[in-house]
Amino acid sequence: MRSIKYFFIFLIMATIVYLPSIVLADTAQTTKKTAETTPATQKKTGLQQSQTNLGKVTKSSGLSFSLESTIGTVIKGALSLVGTIFLILTVYAGILWMTARGDDSQVEKSQNIIRASIIGLFITLSAYAITYYITNRLSV
Image 1 (cartoon, helix red, strand yellow):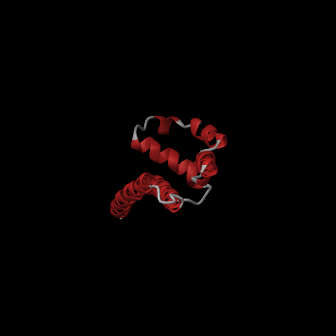
Image 2: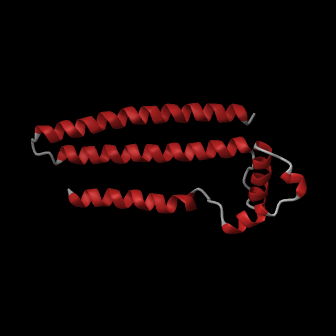
Image 3: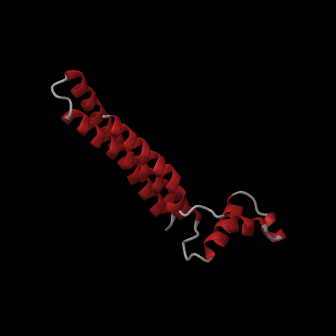
């Protein structure tokens, strides 16, 4: 049981460490380039400046640089991570249930984890569907 706990802790820590490289985090070189802005772009504020900086960062990578699609991608990535966490919780609860050996308190605990995971997964899928719908409407 202790090894399963350490495995999940390791999995969560590895996700935290490697997540920035997965979502193409900003590099020092890109930050240096965006710091050297021209006077014309310094007059822009708020979303205009964000749009300009995003265009500079994604210019050489070939990625889309619309602010709406970038926000949608970040939200989809976060929702995917939350869905993965719920999947891990469901697997953990299933293992807990299988190793209960007739202990009613452990079976009840695992059933509660599974119920909470299913409810959380439903909420996550609903949020994903809403985000998908809104980002498609914004990018039209």
